[in-house]
Length: 264
Image 1 (cartoon, rainbow, N blue to C red):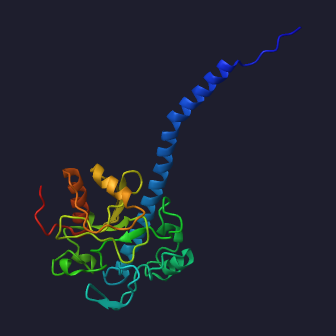
Image 2 (image 1 turned 45 degrees about the vertical axis):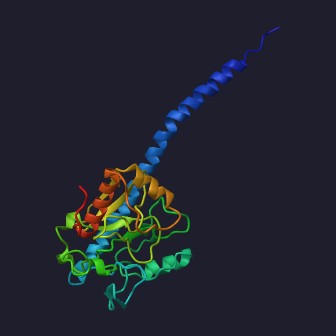
Image 3 (image 1 turned 120 degrees about the vertical axis):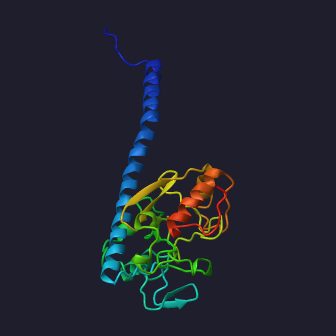
């Protein structure tokens, strides 16, 4: 009689263990590769939006597009947009179709006619818009930024110290009612630090280049993740040097300066 050959139970367990080890080794690499692709796509979106932002200024006597989402043709104590159509013409985050309509009515739509470019690939379900314009770029102008030359700007020629140092777009991760807010005069956050693409955030600058910033402070990352799905916590103050460094880089990127003396 011929003896039938096959795997023993021990041999099967060894094979399964080897496969499990290989999966444990390969999965993080695959995740990093997938995240790298999404990050590259997000940076490309920001590049396209910033090019559109610049083209709008080119065709409108160097005036910046209204960066206050949903505040078209309104004159307010914290920002005169009485004859300015907002780059996103409306704020209706509860309906996908409404968001798409607001994007298509926006002042940048003639320059970026692709809804997908307004949304990061890692955006939340139901959010057609994840990018925000910074407070300083012709968005809302609260009293604490009024009268500071070169801070809140309505024309590209007003940007100080130079275009390569001033933020325009940020991947905030959800639709915001006006713009991305950060103080110029207080050593604390206004809107939460976004945590996008790992432990950082993607941003664009007025000269057109884009970057991914990795947060230095572990407390910045923790706070961002804690409040990612719970809305802003206005007034959060870091406690470490690295946490304050994250705050300073965003404030300087937004306003071009700090209107207070930092602790270091």
